[in-house]
Image 1 (cartoon, rainbow, N blue to C red):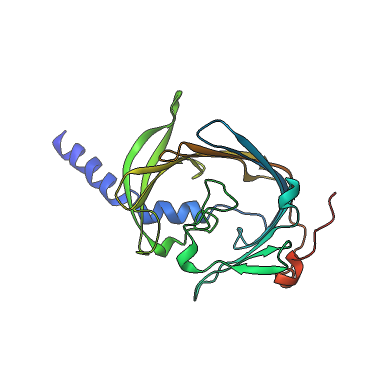
Image 2: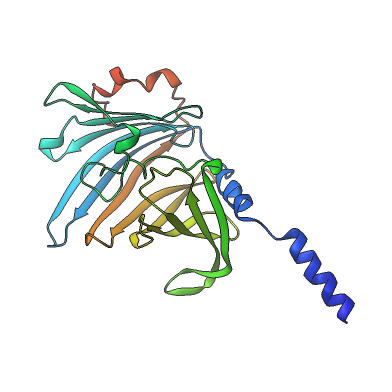
Length: 254
């Protein structure tokens, strides 16, 4: 019996997943070539005052290339955003401000700034390259949802290598079958809880695509609810369309 138990323990040690392997499995999930969607973004401050923004998004290559145009409120109409993530240098981010007829470049030092007053920073708007973090699996049998203990998740800690990151770490609840992240907690430089995120997905042509994101800034008592709708995939977007000249023109609305 002792030999049998030792074999099981050795088997589990050999075949147990590491944090970086889990992160890679999350990254390797099937993704459509491109996505177009309409979205609403509801901002709620600590006094309960709300602001609703409507926007159009077009993205490609797992959102490494993305354009966003704002339709509402009226004061924000025409403001747009272009992001092109690069593997060999700083990401390119630009905001078009039609009222001033000029672009605002988002430098790497400004990535902690809020995106359009929301609880998403420009850093939150970028993908997480597997090589840019250190990973640790904290738990292999954590409840994915607070109100439902039947579905179990990996609990993954991700620590950014970039010392300029606004975060000291993220803790994510990752589904053990689909490798989707359902919940996340993000901590500031002082290791204090800064943001809580919950994510929901819709299944479109066998792709799991985010259709709802709720972000709560614990320290500011402010929240953002992003609802994604009218999702269309694999429309044949080309790299050349992701350009500053493109975001200066409002796209046609279907």
